[in-house]
Length: 316
Image (cartoon, rainbow, N blue to C red; front, side, top):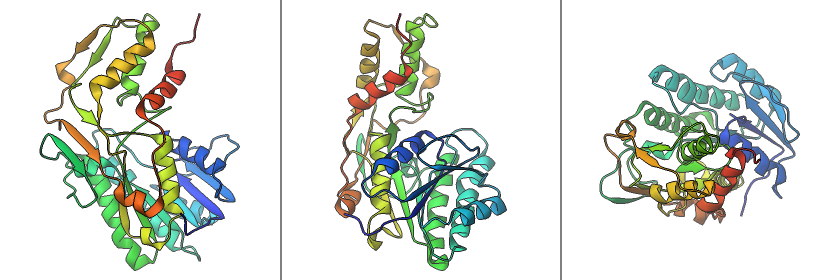
């Protein structure tokens, strides 16, 4: 399946949601790297990796940290996904990625760099049921989507003049243990926990009539590592990470309520509705599967159950 082996892998944004699962995957993989360096804003304790504190928006600090680690592979997860300051999106999602790529180009042995984008880059598509492959134009117009599109295009273009092999990924809706509570379904589960704790009387939700392509973070981690280990055909390419199957938000909501073991009232809040909401959008990951043999292994119901194990209130 693979065409590369690694001595040292550096993971940026290692303390984040996907980073947690990626470090765990790397630590137990049969083709695991000999050394794992976990880089984030603050150093953290852990047995799976060497922890390094670094602000990647600081060009000199990024260069120094990457030079000291001497990785032959970099998985760049670091970024920002929420907020209203467009300048922050540019600094963290675009400029910091440029700092990583510049530092990689300064190493005597050029590492492969995997750059993490998002399905948000596709933007609002047309039609009631959209299956999106990598050839679809990138029409995302939010500050987040624009920053991720610019990051990807800069990384792929820069790989040519820098002679740094770059692989880009566009994951669809990532769920799983540790998912940020602002996102569905973690937002539902945290509200269920609040009801069971007596801190709330019911759930408040937005549009539950849509469907999305939810994929577990552990499957995303496996896909990223499969691409890192792939042969040179992966270089200079962008890949969807997706299941190709729609999951109804209403079904997710019902499953979250089932976790409570009792009926919970649900109120639809108009303020949570989006101006434009595509009924169904899923990703086509054929390109990823054909190159690496990757297959998703964790369905959304198992993913949801694992999330609930972390979120549920302690028993009596």
